[in-house]
Image (cartoon, rainbow, N blue to C red; front, side, top):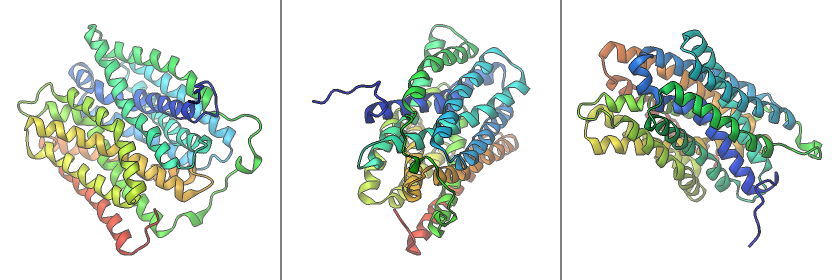
Length: 394
């Protein structure tokens, strides 16, 4: 059996591990743990409307990073901005643990969003470029399982802080310390030596990549961005607000992370066998069912299932869309990864804003969930149209 050296920058195992750890920091610490800590923050600091605004501006930063990433041409520059993303994810987390100034929180969430984009988009592009393996689709499925780990690991850290009677501020500080020490490994591994072939160091923007199918794919990913963000921001509070389910919100969020870890590998394997678009359609349809459950019933088991359906689909869908985009882009995967995530980011910016407006108007989450389910269903229709027109390339 071949020995695995996890300090070898060119080892596939170390590259995938570094990518997963980068996602735990850039996506988990800088974004998803906010959801885990939302219920205690709502009790003594945040309002639902301000929480929605914070979520929206976080995705404004993410959207800016997504657009910016499209134009990073040099591999060494990609590494620099990936590392910057790691640093920003850590510093902005520290802000949340040491201040309660609304202006600073707004700024930190915007900057954290930019950092998350560098970790997810640029980091994933580096992982895809560095991997030396024939079937990168399956390997990237393992990489994107890091999104599930990002939810689970950061949620468990937050739970541990509360177990020892800490506050949500303490949780942010502990998460900062955790991210600081863990960040050294991905920043070391996800880099290139000085002997990188100059033929692959520069990539040029090619408008020909944006075929009719790619445009429909980008529009569908916008719809998925909407579907992802409403539950990722509010799901613990949605569950806690249902009669008889008070206190079950955090358990549901933990199930989201658990379901998300294997989902990428499962969905990517299915995509390899049956085609990416077919599997995306199935996953988005299941997500619609999960979104509607909390609006239609307060049954405990069904609502726990809604968390499983959400975690089991949205993380896999990120992997499916991003990997398909990277494959279609060829030599420069960051081009379509960035374009797709820009569309996704626009949906993420808009969804918390309409959700807050509907929550304040009707006093519950039902209508926000109905509208979200409708938008995600529209994404399914767009992909079905691409199949009817026979312009699918997967």
